[in-house]
Length: 347
Image 1 (cartoon, rainbow, N blue to C red):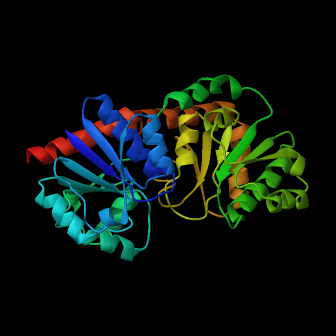
Image 2 (image 1 turned 120 degrees about the vertical axis):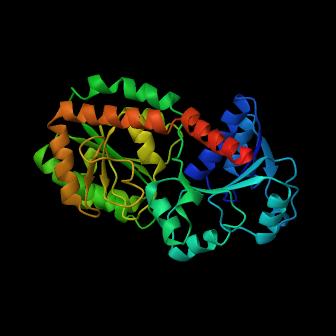
């Protein structure tokens, strides 16, 4: 098959990651695949590194001046907008058109996507919460399907393999990843850390993401600065995850989280808020612990309980890894997509 993945965002996130790694997998399986994305973006650079063909996304392309002939499948990944002229040209060329949506948004944003239904073969939601938004926007259940985010398991699995021994050792290290520019998520994490330290003073903490003196100042005001490592955004996240026992996500907004999936793939036990997207792939007390959002005390209680029960901690982390490995690894997700593409072409 000839498959084109389209990603119009210059950001490097789970959307670009999906477009890249599924295309690379298609190529490995003998298909012809390319990624249409902004030139000079991190995604374009990563495509070059993995030897995936890159096509530059320009304003003219967005307006519909783009030759779609020759592509069996065109998959738009989290499109900012869908130009009717472009969609008509793609459909007229005989291509099957798919829309992969990972982010949650406003009802109006999903209603705009739903307007493209006459041209779209299938809308793909990255989690059940996205499918619910599709339904609310008026799409028929037969026009939607759930395909989760993918992850290249290799490096993360290495971190998971050392976890059984780590869970038997003290002190525990509790971490999170946050790029929240308001610093509210980081503050919630530090408030949780203070509660945990009051009961288990030997515990260490790690905060990865935005590195700002205001975060360190807040930690000092709580008198816990000496127990918290604050690290900037990093490229060696598998190694960072390998140092964590527990990942405590203190997000306040719904949506999928790449760092959460990475933590689960690393065998890190996860405590997450009950928010759409974030908690979609977690069964409470089975492959993680779900707490109420913006409740640092509830998060602290969950962390304390997990530290006090290494056996349960390891069992949850193993189940979380198995779920990601069996449902979100690149070969699994790419295989799901290929079956959907083949079925659409055969129809």
